[in-house]
Image 1 (cartoon, helix red, strand yellow):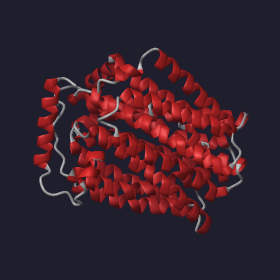
Image 2 (tube, one colour; image 1 turned 180 degrees about the horizontal axis):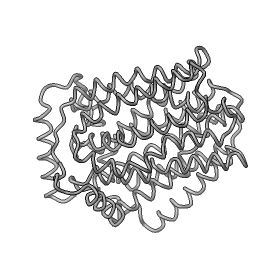
Image 3 (cartoon, one colour; image 1 turned 180 degrees about the vertical axis):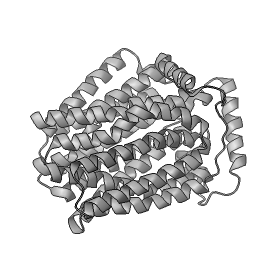
Image 4 (cartoon, one colour; image 1 turned 90 degrees about the vertical axis):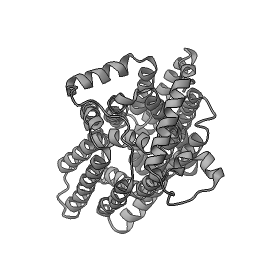
Length: 434
């Protein structure tokens, strides 16, 4: 990072410290803060607490949705399509949303997206309890939920820098991903118990109520709106500038390429897990919950590792290592038929995917100019989260014709080949100056 950029980052960090003056709710040990510097910030402690509760609910719903659709249709294809309906709006709308997020008060915007998400979650539960949750109804509600997410996610990811500044961004992003995946360790296990004991509808209802914690946390944050877009720029021109920069900046282009490959060929292993639990291990809802929890636990460890080495290890190396670990683990998973070993391999895969994805996310934000960050993140999310529907659809279709394990293995093999090619080409070494 250039000297002038370092001075600018320091000034911004001081602005954020001044604007969020006052002791953080929890005084953490110095040694702990040296590993997780983002958690020294008052803002991020509130955010962490709210998300930790809210995202457990999110995973309750994710497991409940996949389980319900599979029980309704007994088809891997429709499980994949349902997951795709959650992601299609991200492909359609997130680039446009990034333009308007750049102009918005992100704090107020995030409160409203949480309110809407909570409403949709409770509506999911109501239609299931009243036996009117046909497949078309579920697909429509999934699309609505995904549309809300297409606004929420670019706002949320670019809001992080306004909470902690650039200096601690490389710590905040893996912690944010760690909360998401730590909840994946708890939520699926809870979902298995809930579904078995009380019915799948409760996974949606409880998710709706957990949003209250997220709303409370965001409301209590004191952000610094350092950067804004001039209002006289037409939204269409603004979006066009963001698209051009994203696809012509050599490093951001490669970040998006890696994210797209991961979304299409790696991420669908989670979508297919209800099928794996039912058909391969004959373990039902409880087994589904434990398998996803194993991946979540690995992701949590990945978040701890990525935050701890954020300022010490070259980020290109972290991306390459994460890609290698996740692909090899999933290839081995495809050949495995032992339930216990399956948990170990998913733990390793979760670790690898998290370190790779969170580091790429950090690199995109660090490479983005301050006045274009929301727009570029909107494009990035289009190429990552927006491509998940394609991956889910392809995976569901291929699994219907072959098997879920074959589909997971072939996807991981493709990513391993692409990653090896890019490594030999020297692409990863170009990421190391951030």
